[in-house]
Image (tube, rainbow, N blue to C red; front, side):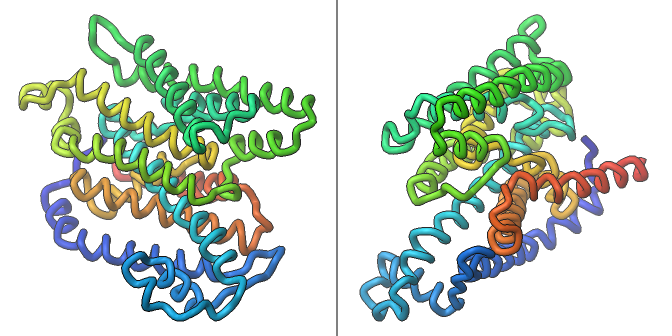
Length: 360
């Protein structure tokens, strides 16, 4: 991965605060628009003032000062349906982008992302197995992300063991092993769908299809809480290693000379990346290209410093998922969100790849 010249890095540092503020504003406006606009089927549009009023009524400190709801159905539409879906999509995008930055940085490979290293396939398989067994509601809804984390972590351990040589992890072999193991595990998911079809359980069929294609349609507040818990733990582990991630950008030997425990830090990143990926995949299924493309976009905007790169990538990932969900819900009759992110992400990645080749 290339390091920006000092002049470019300094210029990016000067404007990164405005970038973050702009992304926060854009995210708030788009989320408000997404929550307010009616979908292509029900057409129940809610004005921005009603949306803000509902949010006001559900804010713990300010709720006592809020007047009664202006419309009887505003709470059920806005607070119980659209707000958790929008917040969940924002958090899924942020977590996938966070994992993408971490994997690309410590592997020193621009093609690394949760899908390429096999974590997504392993997590999706665990989630699908639990759906097929009818255990999605166990442990207050936390059974699916826990199962997804376990299988995602087991997948990563298999990839990790295949990539080790003389006690050290080979980054290139890790990526190749992840692709092979992930492809192998992915082949089991259509098998699970076939078993669900034979059982005749429509709910399980739709849930497994959502895992295959990526969807936010089933999100509720329990998923938002789960994403927050897993995100805080995994994100905290990664945020605590921003200095090590910066040093790793100069190469493993240089980082080791500067005091970074290379192998232990790699295991830490793998564990945290698996945790946040499992949470995102168990809720939204396979959402392609977010963890691959968003980190590259963030680096082009704010540079390689992970103290700025991590929050910027998370905001961009959340913005991309909220936008894709808005397009899906309002304009495309609930088309699966993974299809939209692929349609957006593939051309953008091709453009970034071409720009990288030209720059050389």
